[in-house]
Length: 113
Image (spheres, rainbow, N blue to C red):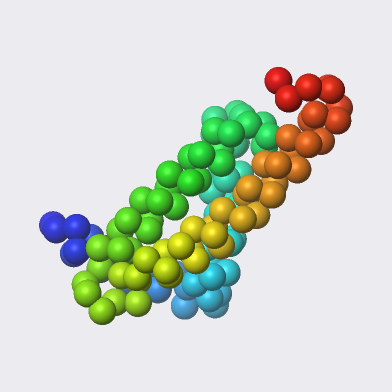
């Protein structure tokens, strides 16, 4: 299976999920981003102020956008500005959660360590 075929299957699967849950693609990026962040933190047993859950989500989102960018020419997903928008939507709340947790931890213990 070629990368273009994989990206077509992946794009259709994501679209079907969006329809099933009744959320826009932007909302899906936001909700799924937070869900993945929390899942990675739970599985790795890392605190929310640790960089690992955030970085894990970032890697997953970059893979998602790489697949999207390899859809057939002319596809709505094969578009770098749209991928940038998706990355921002996915990473904004997880970044705020991690920064908030780091600030609260710093206030509590008095250091960033």
